[in-house]
Length: 311
Picture 1 (cartoon, helix red, strand yellow):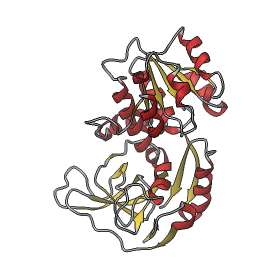
Picture 2 (picture 1 turned 120 degrees about the vertical axis):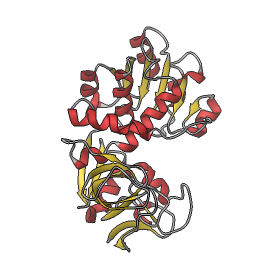
Picture 3 (picture 1 turned 90 degrees about the vertical axis):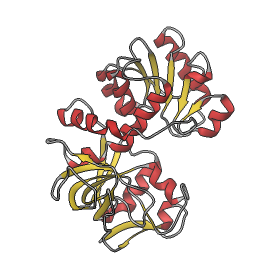
């Protein structure tokens, strides 16, 4: 089968290769999926650079949508031919950017949800939901809160705005022009990035916001986010962990009990199928054009999720 993987760590464009590999065999609790669509993420390039270092070679592609091709021992409730989606493991010699992928966590793909849209969901939804939950924006405790989502033009931030609104929070979002109107249509108040952001946010909120989620790439903007809240502990970052520790901001993976929230994926997949939730797909590429997709992702100018078409 074709697979995109690296045999040594370094810059993704230098170490990744599209090559042939053996089709993986599902172990207990696993299924094998004939991959239709695979989402690309900054985490893929971080893996290439040595994040979560382990045995090599290592595959990339952490979000998969496809059809069940084989079922391992102890797996129930799914059969060969079923349409599924889910996060792909990142520790094996191949991953989601392959003709076939093994999944430990998987869910039925609802009728009406196309493979590309399904493959765009897992990382954005899980990361956003876990971050909001850690911050205190929860289904039963969000009404009346004013929440800033910084970096709402990215896929995680875009998902976080929708989740926070769904839970009853008032949301102020920072975003560029690409998605500003769409965010406003959802019900968020939107302002731009850059100088004076904290003042603009506080003006919209009528004072400091209750909580702030930093979903933007590392850009030295965390001090400005801190200026939107009463105390640094009222903010949580998903990216700038080093600055968070200096500023007293909470950060993803920085607290005990920070388990993955994959259990919410079926709910948001159904909402996406119903047309009431989305992670925007910017462009799709055939697997053989992975280099162009990687270059666009690394440029920071993708403007949404990038998807590899596999099958």
